[in-house]
Length: 116
Figure (cartoon, rainbow, N blue to C red):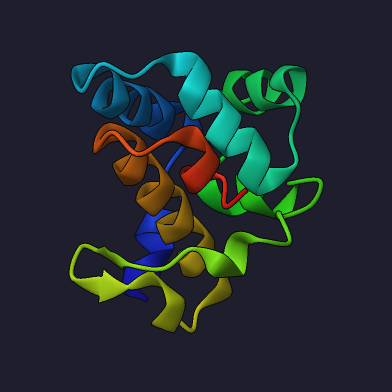
C-alpha cells in the first residue's frame, strides 16, 4: 500500500513544513493553526498535544474531535489530484489540509479559506 507510508508519517514532522510554507509567503503560524483547528475541531491545546505526542497522520485525523461540516466544500488540485475526487477518506483529509495551506500561502483571505 503506497498510502501507508504517508499515513504513518509523524504529524509533528509535517506540521513545521506546513508552517514554513505559509511563512515563506508572509503568512503566520497562527493562521496555519486556525486552519488546522477549523478543519479538525482541535483547540490550540489539543493540537499542541498531538504534536508533542508525535502521533502519525492516521492517529491525528482519527482522534480529531470533529471534521468541519464545510470540509466537503474544499475543492481544487493538490499534487495533480482533485481533492474532491479522492475516494480514500484519510487521504482526502490529508489533501484537504494541504489544499487549505496552499490557499493560505497563495494569499487567499481567511474567510474564503475557511469557507465562511
